[in-house]
Each structure stands twice: as C-alpha cells, then as structure tokens.
Image (cartoon, rainbow, N blue to C red; front, side, top):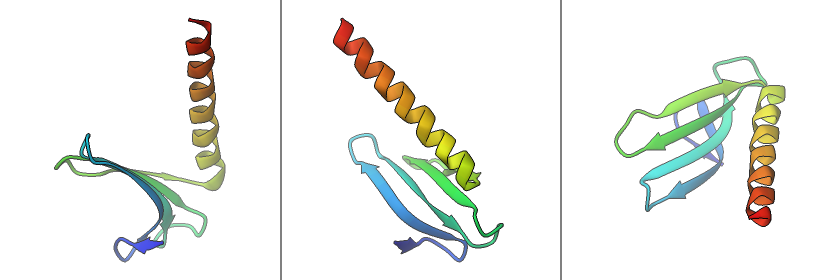
Length: 78
C-alpha cells in the first residue's frame, strides 16, 4: 500500500518499463467510502484516472478476464 497524495491510496500496481507505462488501482478518500480508482500512466502524459464503485470495478475485471480467455481460445484454435 502506498499513499500517492491526500486522496489516493495505491493498493497494487504494474510497471512496464519497456513501454514507459504504469497501471495502478486503489482507494479514494475524498469520494464516497467505497470508491476505487484505476490509473493509467504513460510516458510524460497526464495520468488517466477512472473512478468506480466496487460493482463497477468487478465488471472491469470480468470483462478483462473474458477477453483474455477468448484470446487464449482463439490462439489455441489457430
């Protein structure tokens, strides 16, 4: 856990040094108590931050899992 600023508490991150980018997620203090964020950072661009409720974050995880599974099935059929 890492406190990024007075509002964002980073819980997990993934850094891709080759692509100069970082993906991270965590909690937000200045919004409703269950608000979570997903942050996308690349090079020197301003970070893109999405705010979600827990059910919305779960949908993001479900969608990502579905497309990853479909990609693997497609690769196996080739």
